[in-house]
Length: 186
Image (cartoon, rainbow, N blue to C red; front, side, top):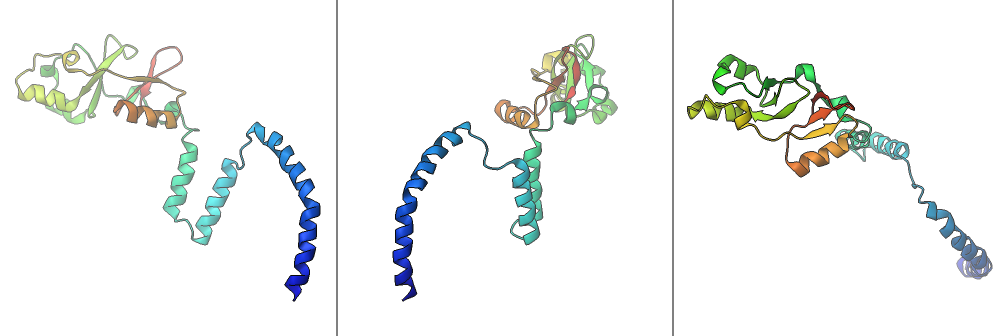
Protein backbone atom coordinates (compact mmCIF):
# COMPACT_ATOMS: atom_id res chain seq x y z
CA UNK A 1 0.00 0.00 0.00
CA UNK A 2 2.82 2.42 0.84
CA UNK A 3 4.61 1.65 -2.45
CA UNK A 4 1.53 2.50 -4.53
CA UNK A 5 1.10 5.82 -2.75
CA UNK A 6 4.85 6.65 -2.97
CA UNK A 7 5.02 5.66 -6.66
CA UNK A 8 2.82 8.52 -7.81
CA UNK A 9 4.89 11.00 -5.77
CA UNK A 10 8.20 9.63 -7.11
CA UNK A 11 6.83 9.74 -10.66
CA UNK A 12 5.80 13.37 -10.15
CA UNK A 13 9.32 14.23 -8.83
CA UNK A 14 10.93 12.52 -11.84
CA UNK A 15 8.86 14.60 -14.23
CA UNK A 16 9.77 17.84 -12.46
CA UNK A 17 13.49 17.04 -12.08
CA UNK A 18 13.93 15.67 -15.63
CA UNK A 19 14.55 19.13 -17.10
CA UNK A 20 17.28 20.20 -14.60
CA UNK A 21 18.94 16.77 -14.98
CA UNK A 22 19.09 17.13 -18.78
CA UNK A 23 20.52 20.65 -18.45
CA UNK A 24 23.18 19.48 -15.97
CA UNK A 25 24.07 16.48 -18.18
CA UNK A 26 24.53 18.79 -21.14
CA UNK A 27 26.76 21.16 -19.14
CA UNK A 28 28.93 18.39 -17.72
CA UNK A 29 29.90 17.31 -21.24
CA UNK A 30 31.81 20.58 -21.59
CA UNK A 31 33.36 20.35 -18.14
CA UNK A 32 34.59 16.78 -18.77
CA UNK A 33 36.45 17.74 -21.93
CA UNK A 34 39.51 18.76 -19.94
CA UNK A 35 40.08 14.99 -19.42
CA UNK A 36 41.00 15.40 -15.77
CA UNK A 37 41.72 12.02 -14.19
CA UNK A 38 38.90 10.62 -12.13
CA UNK A 39 41.32 9.34 -9.49
CA UNK A 40 44.92 10.06 -8.57
CA UNK A 41 47.75 7.64 -7.82
CA UNK A 42 47.45 8.47 -4.13
CA UNK A 43 43.75 7.60 -4.10
CA UNK A 44 44.40 4.27 -5.82
CA UNK A 45 47.20 3.45 -3.38
CA UNK A 46 44.88 4.33 -0.47
CA UNK A 47 42.25 1.98 -1.92
CA UNK A 48 44.87 -0.76 -2.31
CA UNK A 49 45.96 -0.27 1.31
CA UNK A 50 42.33 -0.46 2.47
CA UNK A 51 41.87 -3.61 0.41
CA UNK A 52 44.98 -5.05 2.03
CA UNK A 53 43.72 -4.29 5.54
CA UNK A 54 40.32 -5.82 4.82
CA UNK A 55 41.87 -8.93 3.30
CA UNK A 56 40.49 -8.38 -0.21
CA UNK A 57 44.02 -7.86 -1.58
CA UNK A 58 46.97 -10.04 -0.59
CA UNK A 59 50.17 -8.42 0.70
CA UNK A 60 52.22 -9.36 -2.36
CA UNK A 61 49.49 -8.01 -4.67
CA UNK A 62 49.50 -4.71 -2.81
CA UNK A 63 53.28 -4.50 -3.13
CA UNK A 64 53.13 -5.20 -6.88
CA UNK A 65 50.54 -2.48 -7.46
CA UNK A 66 52.53 0.07 -5.46
CA UNK A 67 55.73 -0.84 -7.34
CA UNK A 68 54.00 -0.30 -10.69
CA UNK A 69 53.41 3.34 -9.76
CA UNK A 70 57.08 3.73 -8.85
CA UNK A 71 58.29 2.66 -12.33
CA UNK A 72 57.78 6.14 -13.77
CA UNK A 73 59.51 7.77 -10.81
CA UNK A 74 62.72 5.71 -11.07
CA UNK A 75 65.30 6.54 -13.75
CA UNK A 76 68.19 4.61 -15.27
CA UNK A 77 70.57 6.69 -13.16
CA UNK A 78 68.85 5.48 -9.98
CA UNK A 79 69.19 1.78 -10.78
CA UNK A 80 72.38 1.56 -12.85
CA UNK A 81 75.65 -0.06 -11.86
CA UNK A 82 78.16 2.79 -11.80
CA UNK A 83 81.06 2.72 -14.26
CA UNK A 84 83.63 2.01 -11.53
CA UNK A 85 81.89 -1.34 -10.85
CA UNK A 86 81.46 -2.44 -14.49
CA UNK A 87 83.20 -5.49 -15.94
CA UNK A 88 85.12 -3.93 -18.80
CA UNK A 89 88.16 -4.70 -20.95
CA UNK A 90 89.95 -3.03 -23.83
CA UNK A 91 88.62 -4.26 -27.17
CA UNK A 92 92.12 -5.25 -28.30
CA UNK A 93 92.49 -7.77 -25.46
CA UNK A 94 92.93 -11.27 -26.83
CA UNK A 95 90.92 -14.19 -25.53
CA UNK A 96 94.27 -15.81 -24.69
CA UNK A 97 95.14 -12.93 -22.33
CA UNK A 98 92.17 -13.59 -20.04
CA UNK A 99 93.06 -16.01 -17.28
CA UNK A 100 90.67 -18.54 -15.78
CA UNK A 101 90.69 -16.53 -12.54
CA UNK A 102 89.74 -13.34 -14.41
CA UNK A 103 86.93 -15.15 -16.22
CA UNK A 104 85.59 -16.49 -12.94
CA UNK A 105 85.44 -12.95 -11.51
CA UNK A 106 83.82 -11.33 -14.57
CA UNK A 107 80.11 -10.86 -15.06
CA UNK A 108 78.29 -12.77 -17.80
CA UNK A 109 78.37 -9.65 -20.00
CA UNK A 110 81.62 -7.76 -20.40
CA UNK A 111 81.77 -4.23 -21.77
CA UNK A 112 84.56 -3.58 -24.28
CA UNK A 113 85.93 -0.14 -25.01
CA UNK A 114 88.37 1.68 -27.25
CA UNK A 115 90.91 3.76 -25.25
CA UNK A 116 88.61 4.51 -22.27
CA UNK A 117 85.16 3.78 -20.82
CA UNK A 118 83.65 6.78 -22.60
CA UNK A 119 84.18 5.00 -25.93
CA UNK A 120 82.31 1.72 -25.49
CA UNK A 121 82.26 -0.39 -28.65
CA UNK A 122 80.33 -3.51 -27.69
CA UNK A 123 79.49 -6.30 -25.28
CA UNK A 124 81.14 -9.70 -25.06
CA UNK A 125 79.32 -12.62 -23.49
CA UNK A 126 81.43 -14.66 -21.10
CA UNK A 127 80.18 -17.84 -22.78
CA UNK A 128 81.55 -16.60 -26.14
CA UNK A 129 84.99 -16.27 -24.56
CA UNK A 130 84.73 -19.81 -23.21
CA UNK A 131 83.60 -21.11 -26.62
CA UNK A 132 86.57 -19.37 -28.29
CA UNK A 133 88.88 -21.06 -25.75
CA UNK A 134 87.26 -24.43 -26.40
CA UNK A 135 87.55 -24.08 -30.18
CA UNK A 136 91.20 -23.06 -29.98
CA UNK A 137 90.55 -19.52 -31.19
CA UNK A 138 92.41 -17.79 -28.37
CA UNK A 139 94.09 -15.35 -30.78
CA UNK A 140 90.77 -13.60 -31.45
CA UNK A 141 90.36 -10.18 -29.86
CA UNK A 142 87.34 -9.30 -27.78
CA UNK A 143 86.25 -6.91 -30.53
CA UNK A 144 86.01 -9.83 -32.98
CA UNK A 145 83.55 -11.76 -30.80
CA UNK A 146 81.63 -8.74 -29.48
CA UNK A 147 77.97 -7.96 -30.00
CA UNK A 148 76.58 -4.46 -30.55
CA UNK A 149 75.91 -2.33 -27.51
CA UNK A 150 72.69 -0.38 -26.90
CA UNK A 151 72.69 2.88 -24.98
CA UNK A 152 70.16 4.92 -23.02
CA UNK A 153 70.35 8.28 -21.27
CA UNK A 154 70.36 8.66 -17.49
CA UNK A 155 66.89 10.22 -17.37
CA UNK A 156 65.07 7.31 -19.07
CA UNK A 157 62.37 5.92 -16.75
CA UNK A 158 62.32 2.32 -15.56
CA UNK A 159 58.99 1.86 -17.37
CA UNK A 160 60.60 2.88 -20.67
CA UNK A 161 63.62 0.68 -19.91
CA UNK A 162 61.39 -2.36 -19.44
CA UNK A 163 59.79 -1.68 -22.81
CA UNK A 164 63.25 -1.33 -24.43
CA UNK A 165 64.47 -4.57 -22.84
CA UNK A 166 61.46 -6.44 -24.23
CA UNK A 167 61.58 -4.77 -27.65
CA UNK A 168 65.31 -5.26 -28.26
CA UNK A 169 65.59 -8.56 -26.37
CA UNK A 170 68.73 -7.22 -24.68
CA UNK A 171 69.72 -7.71 -21.07
CA UNK A 172 72.09 -4.79 -20.69
CA UNK A 173 72.18 -1.15 -21.75
CA UNK A 174 75.02 1.32 -21.33
CA UNK A 175 73.85 4.47 -19.56
CA UNK A 176 75.10 7.73 -21.08
CA UNK A 177 75.25 11.03 -19.21
CA UNK A 178 74.23 14.42 -20.62
CA UNK A 179 77.74 15.05 -21.99
CA UNK A 180 77.94 11.73 -23.86
CA UNK A 181 80.17 9.97 -21.34
CA UNK A 182 79.50 6.57 -19.86
CA UNK A 183 77.76 6.65 -16.45
CA UNK A 184 77.28 2.93 -15.99
CA UNK A 185 75.17 -0.02 -17.09
CA UNK A 186 71.63 -1.12 -16.41
